[in-house]
Every structure is written in structure tokens, then in C-alpha cells.
Image (cartoon, rainbow, N blue to C red; front, side, top):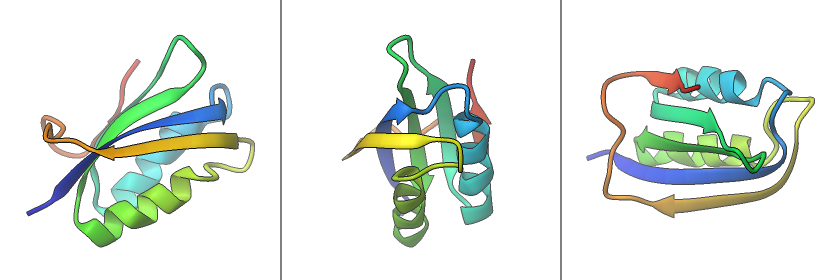
Length: 91
């Protein structure tokens, strides 16, 4: 059974292609979910999939794409898996 996690990334994570890069990486890993910008400048999302793929996504989120600077990653298990299939960028 796939696990599901909610994450929030703080730092320079908006305006640096973070959401789309996260979706690309999640899709490559076979992870489903969503990602969106928050009003406070952070990025949040939900990811569900096999434990190994989720661990790789978590590791990737610790640095993000080249132009990003990740200061903090909050990563916590959730009972609410993302709806639908695939990994989406929300507005």
C-alpha cells in the first residue's frame, strides 16, 4: 500500500521553477500528488507512492532545482492521499 506525505519547503522556492521541477521529479519516480505556491513564499504539496520513491523525492526536495535555495523541509505522514492520478502543479 502506498504511503502519503504532506510537505512544505521554505527558502528561495518561488520563481525558480520549483513546482514544475518537483512535478517532473515526482513523475519520474512514479509518485502521485500535487504541489503549489503558498502566500508566505513557501511551496507545499502532497505525495503518495512506494516508500523508496517517496524517500528519493524527499531527498530531492532538500535541494530542489539548481536556482532554488532550500532552508527547511517539513515532511509528515498524512492519512489523506492525493485525489486523482499523476502529479499536478496547482495554481
